Amino acid sequence: MVLDAPTMLTLTIALAAAAAGYLAIEWRSVREAALLYWSAGFALICVGSTLALLRSQGLLLVGIWFANGLLILVHGLFLIGVARFTGGRLSLGWWAIAAVWLGLLLLPNEPWWSKVMLVVQSFLIGVLAIRASLLLRRRNAGERQLRMVLLAHGLFYLAKMIPPLTPGALIDLAVYRGVIIQISLVEGVMAVMLIALSMTGTVRYRREQRIERLAGSDPLTGLHNRRALETEAPRLFGQASRERPGALLLIDLDNFKQANDLHGHAAGDGLLIALSDLLRTTLPRQALAARLGGDEFVVLLGEAADTDVVRLADTLRLRFNQLAAQRLRTPEPVTLSIGAVLFDQPPKSLAALLERGDGALYEAKRGGRDGLRISVG
Image 1 (cartoon, rainbow, N blue to C red):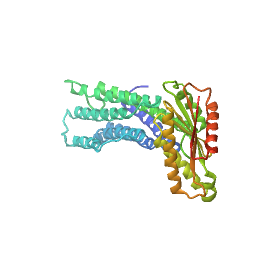
Image 2: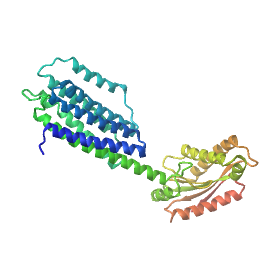
Image 3: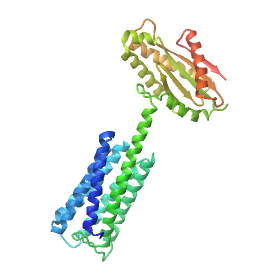
Image 4: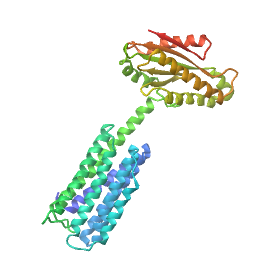
């Protein structure tokens, strides 16, 4: 196969079309907004590369200025997609890129026009690609790969600015003459392929993370479920020592059945959600909170002395009791009973610790409810 300009552009169109279609199909199942921007970007690569083929027909304005402008827009869409994917923010100043490109229309059609066009386009694309790479946080292999590909792609375009500025360099965009243009065509094919693969890999990792998170979370409250708790607990257990004791709090709602019977299960679910929100805002950052099932919750703490446990338990009880009283009226108040276990060495298992916590919770219930009992050992 001869690697001339029409051949390279045709390969680019085929790869970009495949990437656009795949990302659009992925969006139907993942519903990640970034996929739409990326898919649109690859679709515009198809359009721009097709227009670039018209240079051989003498349509230079469409085949050069408009086609290269679409390539800048493509990288703008990639940047917006990355920003949506990572939750990053972009200032309105990025729209100035469009004004810079439109300014090229005011330049006279002189022999040096191709060099100016290439320098400006290379700079704009390089900046967009590098900015997109810097937004990615390298949280997984997919993001790291996409970051590196975009960074390398952006640096390549910034490097493309050097040859046109060199005296005597041959740059003719109309007929694809010049070594740097030939290299750019090859890089374009490779970039489309690598960026597409990196984007699909990034989405796959995000999807797998989402599935894993859903499998490990309680569907009602969004807290960990027992499966996730069993996975995360050993990490916290391993940190326990006399200097850094840990604690388990087993929490149960008193008179919760009355709330369900009198006000319906939706109202009862509202109390469970309210308690889960309270746990999120009250617990220390490194604590683990989970819903075991029904109206039973568990909290694991690291570096928790007995005074810390008492203070936390009292805070949870007082705040929840006030909240429940404001929401629902029941013959007996809906309150919290808490059984706590302190440990200064890694426990044998989570099940063994829960059994001790259940004993302490039973004592709190038998002692009149709405209270705390602590088991030490």
